[in-house]
Image 1 (spheres, helix red, strand yellow):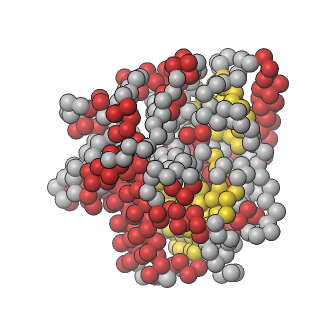
Image 2: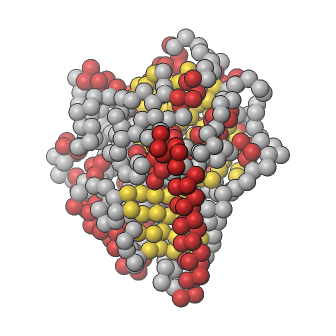
Image 3: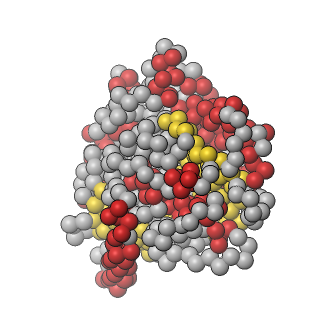
Length: 477
């Protein structure tokens, strides 16, 4: 098809790559995402560029690595995006839900934004009232959040997993899904459309409705993390510090435990997966509305997330580390009339590669200085896709990551190296022999050549990046 397509970009927050049934995780119910997998192309090795929300999203919507954008940690300001190009080219651009721009209400190139932010804003943006806050207030309610959760006698036992006890339609993911349907069903048909939908979940608090939580609590087959004492003892100092910090400070209503019980882990995973299924249901309803309104006759639908969650793997919770559970995310691109169906691309790519892919689909010029690379050749039969030899991820220290000022990851098909600024410690994993990343080879005498090779790749990437983006960095921040 040559007509410019409608582009639907659906993003969750903090969803692991291994939480979709059709992609090999049969312990979760995701029939609507499974359908997208069957009708589209799945990228099994899509890696984020930053290990927390704000820098990853800034990188995604700008097309440059975090060190180039200058946004390397949560709470740092960003707003301008490549959406401006879609807008200028004639697309009607709408965001519903979470994007995590700072300031939250920046237009960022969209004609319309219906902002829904983090479920639990404790310090940053605490008194910014988003669409969800307003809806709750209109119903005479206050959202479940940290101050209220702390009143529970079992607060520290819950590990951030709570049932949503207010009306089900006001749970954040249900609310965003219903708002997206409302916009699609009521706004006069307008094409070409760029619609970005940002679900707040399954980011903590892990807060499914009681019925959905009970469905997963009734299962006894969910595999649970069980890191060995040896792995925990060998964690780098910054991650040992993070484990301790997450016990002492309850970010996002998660009060962590250094030795969670099997019952605690089951509840954590049950609530997380229940959140995923709730989002899946809303995705199905949104796609139905889009189809009924004619938007899917010529459309590309993309699904992804901004990063994952350790959920007890490696003894850690949430993000801010460079394990696969964090840096790999699901990426599905579906357009049956345009691309092949049921395909899987195992080559390395990065999440921000979505940006130039969207611009190319829309017929817009892709800036030559972009560090993101279009995935169109991977989607097009016969396309000469050139995969990345390495993927990279960065994360600056913040109120959550207190044991390191800056972490950088470089990963090839086989090896991963994690560098901690100013420290002699690091991590090196052979992902073929050790896919669970339990045995770091950083100090292994037999792997020093590999370590040097990966450090060289990291150095060369930074040099090339800084040189190639020097003009953009000067004029577009």
